[in-house]
Length: 91
Image (cartoon, rainbow, N blue to C red):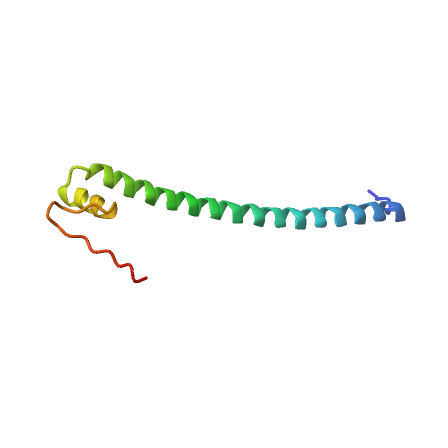
């Protein structure tokens, strides 16, 4: 069985298709890298949010704990009865 040799136009069309496919692949590789960066950033946000959620769940779970109540009161500037509060106004 004998094959016909490809003509110049056929070779040119195949070369053009190869060039187009190569540039398309390079473009897709760039897009994939961009999307992977976005994915990694979102994964980091998810991890941070899960840590925050865990901290809030722990706070809710220990909301009746006297030490936790005292810490919240101190954070809000409250003092115990008979306790004196000194505020540094030098700064």
